[in-house]
Length: 436
Image (cartoon, rainbow, N blue to C red):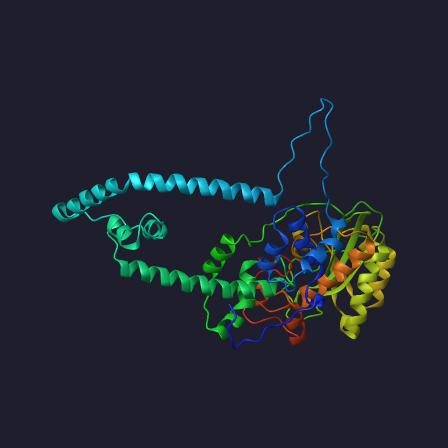
């Protein structure tokens, strides 16, 4: 809820990331939300903004046409549209209310008798009554057949307590709307950010408005509005360790955790499906700050894509690469002569996993999962659009997304500080983070 002292913040198309636009279009295209419902849920400004997105990105989602008549000459059954289903449910609800009103009239005397019996049991035998049902009293009071006084008499509830409860519920609803406003603001850039990290980002904004919201309350609010993020799990093998190249030893297995950036880099390759086939994303990540220092999207599993990501990271770090440890799996791309020559030119030491255990390169695998689960969850058209999505995802990951392992700081903040955040230096091996 915005107060009269808060100026309205106007947003343009650049304020909405491409993954967020495609996610909204997907929900509208699948019939989960209408245009107005999507606009209200995510706080999108403009009357026709969602409709424009649907027209522009309609090719990302399949639209099923209604089938023609069957061989028997009868038309197949067609599922109702969301608007038709809503009208049908509204009709059923009105009929249900009519039946409930009739049953309520018949049960009034029975409720009074039951209330009298419970009062006798409580006063004569000292047996306490069960907890008073304020929800049912409030529902009966709003019914046209019974007033507030009659409903309170049926359940032994005072009118004052009923009105006080209604006021508390109204205040809670108002605070909930203020929280949802901030949630929508954050999710315009980070549409699949987890609830705990979401709470960390909106807490300073809510504190300015004088609103308090805890972790469990935020979970409950998002669950009621169906705004919780569901996890998606998948596994695809992209590593080929059966090659002729030399497999370097693992230099970080028993080493202490890095205390500053540019001491240890981890690299990995992950796949990205597109409408024209599968492309591959090569990443180079700093193990201390969790910052993605190099990335490149390429159309094949050749070494050139990994070299492009490494070259981007080396050019950004400069002389800081001297003595740095580069850790990866035993894939042929990282063990190739060209990649080893690039590491030697940058004066970096090569480290590889000593087996097929993916947990020996867990940090790189975790970064892959974050990008694909929270940012790259829509299907791009081709390689060019995949590169655009990845560029935006890496920027938001480095600049906006807080990490639990970094004391809720962003990777860029830790990288600029030049040291590991306080309180995390004793937390286990650097390559097997518990939470990110």
